[in-house]
Image 1 (cartoon, helix red, strand yellow):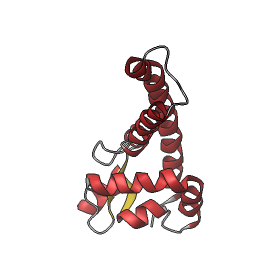
Image 2 (cartoon, helix red, strand yellow; image 1 turned 90 degrees about the vertical axis):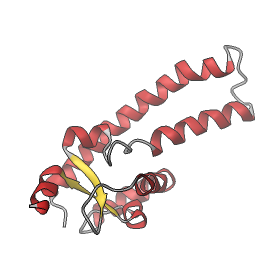
Image 3 (spheres, helix red, strand yellow; image 1 turned 180 degrees about the vertical axis):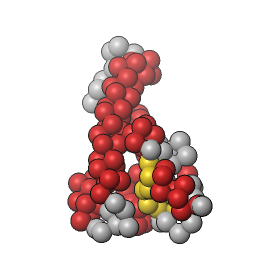
Image 4 (cartoon, one colour; image 1 turned 180 degrees about the horizontal axis):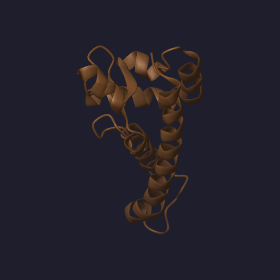
Length: 141
């Protein structure tokens, strides 16, 4: 079972991640999209919308690919691990977990708060959980 300290660290990590995603997506919009489409881009074209949304998906889905850690998780010393082994989760599981968040964001957050173990739908589907680095070290001793 996850403690309240880890839950509060997850909330802070989530806020840090959302700020980072906002900055990354802003840079993508300001720097990359004009390079791809030029200054006279038709913002309502199918091609522009497709590339724009693919960029958003890549940024959101790949936020935890650094060994099961995002910038917020690194700062708050948290990690996504396999629920059965407590070892670093596979890239596939991390991406599956984040795809679920993209489609069920508010529901995911609600479920994460009300479950006793604070696992979100993405965690349940991917077989993952978030633990503190201290918890990981303690469990491996």
